[in-house]
Image (tube, rainbow, N blue to C red; front, side, top):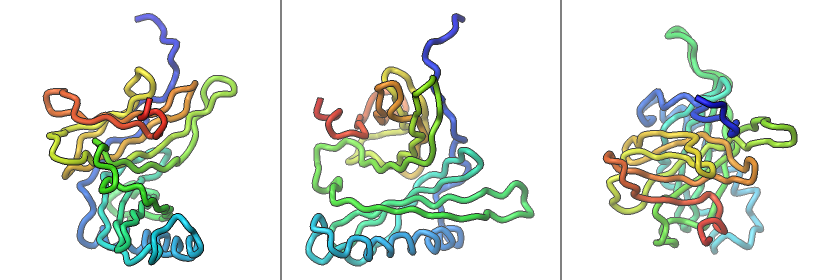
Length: 217
């Protein structure tokens, strides 16, 4: 096989290792994420983009599949509020290396949006993203290693999700309870990420760019 001219990280993260968080583990993750959500209330107190009532009361947290990269495991989440705002965030930690250890060095980040699937019925996939690192490629070129999580909207029969950078598939993850998490390079050599959902027979069930202007094009 001839050498490739397309040097970019593909399938860089470990596939999900666990089911979606539940029970005591979900409570542990929630205890790490809630302070990050609550800090948003202070940071957005005078933000005119929020609806009347501000961020509002938090609803139930929805967890997404884990991905591990660079020695840390990332577990994303979303949370709808009483004013229609969607909070989203990621809890990361150093995973245990054997059965006698516990995960350690927890950290959490969070953000919010008023652009929700409920207000955008044309969306085929509801997506969130968070840049978690960088990958230096050819001189002067850096890819943003981006965690992308979400779910297809409506009843689509989706089985797996892929991340595409230009014409190259750079990650894949099967859906767990209708949700997926991808970890892929973005913004590299002029290409940006597109997420595609597929059925078990490889029929495309949804496609969304991370960038609104790309979707419009």
